[in-house]
Amino acid sequence: MSATSTNTFELTCFWFIVVDREQKARRRYRVAQLVDYKNKTYAEVSKWFETLFQEYSVVKVGKGTIPSKLKKYPYIQY
Image (cartoon, rainbow, N blue to C red):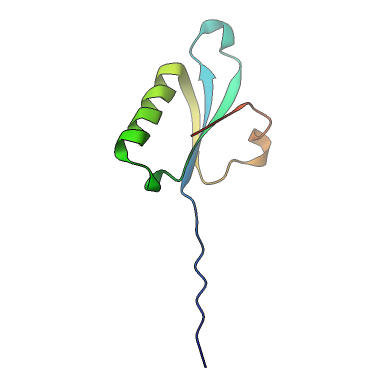
């Protein structure tokens, strides 16, 4: 009898609801997603967060896949 194991590859993701920092675009929500950050270097992840926080104000953060109700918003992926 042979035992089989099933390995599932799961990406580690975080999503963020953000708004532009500019006053005229404050009501325009976007969804930013950081995908598989464990396979990125510290410098890559740091740069992504630096860029995100310079350009946008974060409204909400979640872990895992983006909820379907948020998929209607414009999307930023890294």
